[in-house]
Image (cartoon, rainbow, N blue to C red):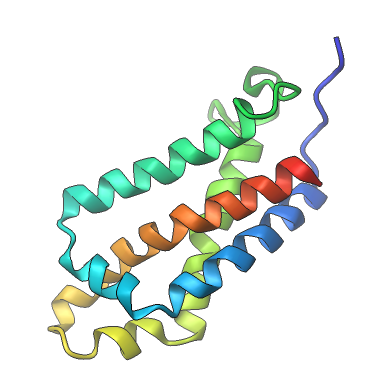
Length: 140
């Protein structure tokens, strides 16, 4: 049986490149922010769950050389998966703040609704970012 490759800093770099490439277009799309504003908290939570599911399946179900039980972990969660989630949500958050997307797209809603809407928009963007990050980690 071939031993699964160890998780290295280069893997995070690959995830980051893939995550940023697919996050960018969704952070600057008004429709994403309008959709996020219309979502309720349960829809946002379910969207975040989809991001986690896609990430896990892409890392450990689509690639049979990886075994989450044999990888380094943080509190029982594989380090590669933790990195993927940080990159997926983090790339969307960083680009949203860098491009001032919440101010641009949410200036017409009350201030108390901006943070929850931004969180939901981050979940929406992360659905796509996680695909890019996981693909880059799996392919390269």
